[in-house]
Length: 109
Image (cartoon, rainbow, N blue to C red):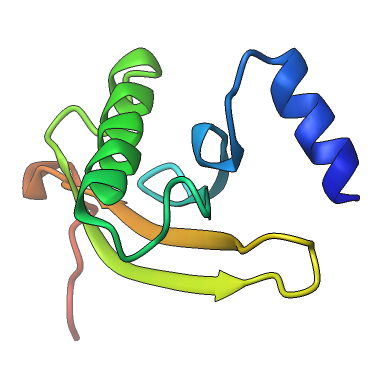
């Protein structure tokens, strides 16, 4: 499986796991952005994290997501042991900022 992912990333022009990402929409204003880390771009490295966040910003701009901005409400790192190298999955929980005037009115009884 790891070799298939590496081959796919190489064919896509990616240099390592850290150049890839996956987006999973939960609602139009809430989604998960999944990035990857490896020995060349470890999850605890500030430069590497800045690169991943810049990639998230690029995604947001290219896909015109969250025009009022967004908040990362959680960041979870999991490792994938036994892959021959340190490979990590980093899941960012992202919520778009919403104009309160766009929210449905809630009326009480």
